[in-house]
Image (tube, rainbow, N blue to C red; front, side, top):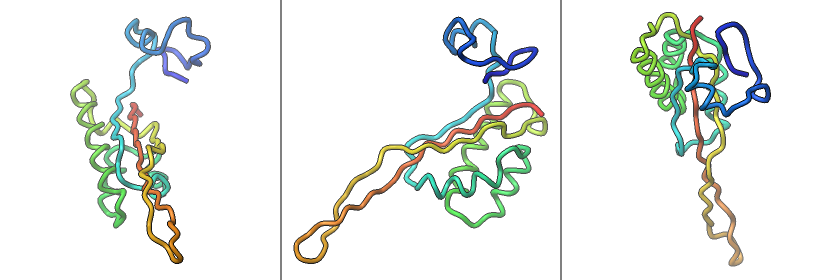
Length: 137
């Protein structure tokens, strides 16, 4: 669902594509930032993402800075990117909150490790795509 000036609209009710609706002014574009092909497991990222979902942007940044987990570094960087994008659009960081935060699976790096009796066991190294969208409170 997308934000309109008055309420919400579902994508199947639109008579044009999402990009066309944004360019026409039917839908207000949300401030977003994303990072792709990050070399970290998406399940580990989602554990940290649940801590900051629906929080204020500055409060989420404070929570992330106090954590001692590896995904924190990626999330802080993307959150700062989104706040910088909002400043360019003319919004203040204090009026923003995290409306949507998503971590999707990226492509997997498939390798093989030597095992006993001449066999090989697979190694799957996962990658992640993280997207953060900010909106006004």
